Length: 428
Image 1 (cartoon, rainbow, N blue to C red):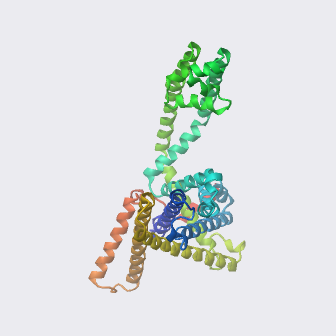
Image 2: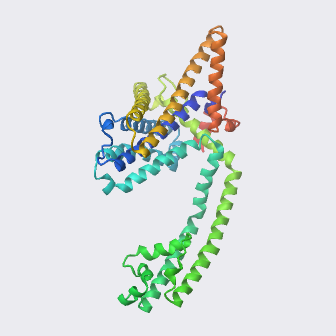
Image 3: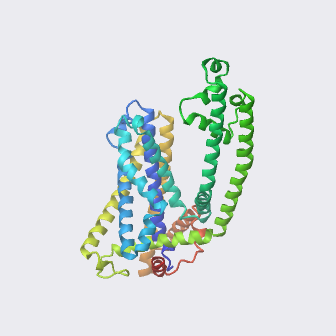
């Protein structure tokens, strides 16, 4: 069809990036288990010499960063509005951050023995960013899944002032509790012995009392902490009634309203996200085009020779990433053949190999069917009936896989004439 997002190559690129994001997450997750399960942060003995996980992670991260850089530059030469929108999108910022964090800290998780002590927060942030990358990429594939993602974004946008109000309420009652124990002398040594539960409110830190009140807010209602006096019971009753009954119902109303609003605009929002994805594909293609002219006149700003070099670098890193993934797949299979201990690592390796098997089957099926149908267009008599039936079967298998991921239910979106759509986006 005329729509870029509905062409097989667009599905292929979208799914390729999705698989790469999964391999990146699984590789980093296994690095975490290596650091936790072995006395040495180098991991198992048969892994130290081959690094079949860290090598794919580095190449995939490099591929993502190069792709993002080319996209930003090509969009800037196409339209400053598009480039600005792309750079300020939280989804794109998180994608770049995840790849950068893996390149910066993925290796240190394996090589630096002090990481878990000094940089555990960084490691946890990296893990969350990798999960968010998968969510961000899958929302372009399936409109039903995208509804939940956009709903969360809308809820966060609408609930920010409510959260500020809620935080002030928690601080207010925390100070009230602190005032009660101070006025009654409950923090004296003899009082602490009589009532050990009061120690948390007598803590010298600022956080302890606030966390205790917040725990009541989220359902950890331990009455023992609030029975030291009648004043404490009164504060507890007012706080629990006001926060749990009143404020939470207000929060539920805000969430329902935000969800309904997003649900009504899902098709519009999802369609726009698809058009923007198509714009990124077209902009990259035009920027790396070796021809003298392009639809967006990038040759006016970037010499043809430089664009050809960028194109060569992009395809080189793409090929290296693909080969690195295959190397990681083979290494994971080899690991399963040798290692029988460490159940968590073995389970994750099985998942890694399973995803790699699906990935290879998809790559081979798409490559074979694409080559066959191209040959069939030029020579309709090519191949016998058995071969044609086999190719039709592979094509149906690929289509079924797309349906399993929710692709086909979204193909009703009319995204024809992508170039015009991109120009319209740029002119806004």
